[in-house]
Image 1: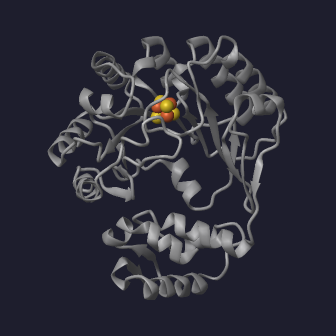
Image 2: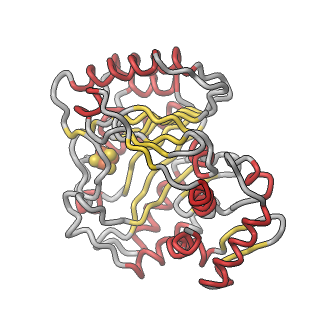
Image 3: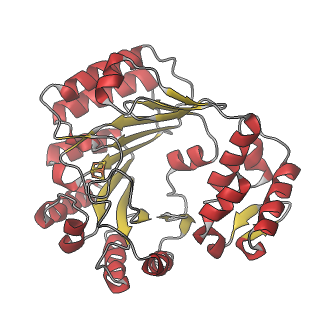
Length: 358
Ligand code: SF4
C-alpha cells in the first residue's frame, strides 16, 4: 500500500499555487489537524506491506519540531513502515532548522526541497516567499545531513526567465549532488493569486523542457529526472495504478476501483465530512491509468499492465495505443508487443494523447 499524507499549512500562499493549504494557520490549527489525523490512524487497518509514505503539502516542514515528532511517531505506529519503505517528505527552505532536518533525516529516506528557482528575481516573480540566505542555508544543511535520496523542485517558463537563466538553475541543482529533480512548466492555475500575470510563453516552455532533458539526470517522466534506481517509488506506483490511501484535507486515494478525495477544507475535514468519490466505469478507469503511465519514459510492459487492478488483456492495450496513434501522430508512439511508450515529441503532447485515449 502507498500512503499520501497531506499537511495543509503554508507560511504564505505562493502566487502560482492553487493547491489546498491554509496560509499562516491560526494558533491551534496544526494541533487540531494532528489530533484528527491520529484519530483516523487509530481506525485504519494498515495494509501490508507499507511500500511508500509521502508527506506532501502544503508545507510539512512548517510544523514545529514537537509537531513533526508527533506526526512521525503516529505514522510509524499506524503504518508500520520497515527498512524497505520509501518515506518522502516535501520541505520548504524557509522552515528548515537544524533540529528539524535531524528529525526528518531520522524518519524519511527522501527529502524534496522546494527551490523553484535559485534566482531570487524569479522566486519574487512567482510570489514565492523565500529569502536567498534562507535558501542557501537550507541547501547547506540538507547536503550535510546526507539523506539517502534528495530531490529538488524547479519551475520554468517564468515570465522574464530565458533559457540561459533556466540552464543556470538546472546546472546549480545538479551540482548539489541531488539524485532526483522535478521540473514543472509554470501553469496558470485557476484560483492562484497571480494567475492573471503569470502567463508562460509556450515556445520558451518547450525549449526549456528540452534543456531539462539534457540536465544530466535521465528523464523518467514528463516532469521528473533521476539517477537510475533513484526514481520516486511512491509516484511511480501511483502512476501505475497502485493502491493509495490518502489522509488529510484534499488528500487523494485509490482503492483499485474508485478514486476519492478528502474534503479540501481543514474545517470540513476536521468535522469528518465524507470524501468525494470519483466513480467512473471500469473501462474508463483502465484508460485513465493507461494514459497516466504513458507520461513515463518506460511506459507499459505486459508485466506491468497485468499488475493494474482489474486489468484487461494486453492485446486490448496495444490496440488502444494503435488507435490513438492513428488518430494523432504515429511518431508520438513506440508500440511493440513488449512495450508501449511515447517518443519525446509524444511526451511533449501527452495532453493530446491522453484526451484521445480517454
Ligand atoms: S507552492 Fe507549496 S509552499 Fe507555495 S503555497 Fe503552494 S503548497 Fe504552499
